[in-house]
Length: 150
Image (cartoon, rainbow, N blue to C red; front, side, top):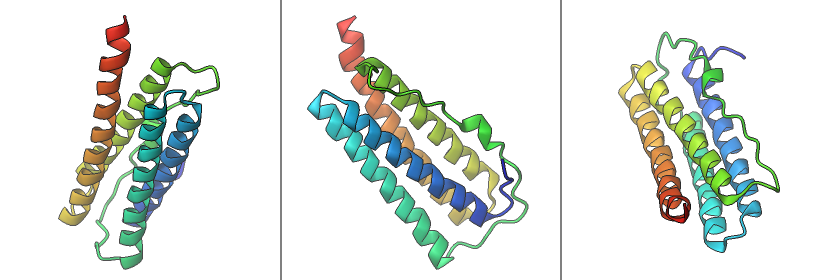
């Protein structure tokens, strides 16, 4: 894995993360038999594209000054193994989605804690908050559907 030595490296990594999250949710939506959850996954896919656009805008405008001395964040610690498939049941899909959102939340929270520039910190905290909202939505669904059935 390459080191993230600059703010631009971090932004590029975050953009790639959002692209992968978008694809993950599109794939999950295709697997859902429940139309309501299909719409939820499609909505999250769109939100991830919104995050990507926000990051690309910041990269293009260069309105946020790069922070100095950004360290290696060991991003491999945040990689979520995605083993979705056509036989995945609804409960497994929710668990996988929750794990993805938790990993994304931790990533952005850690990025916020690594930068010194307040604008950068605010950006990453905002993205962490969005990921936390996604995770909460899946947790609520899990609680209301899966736990009540058992």
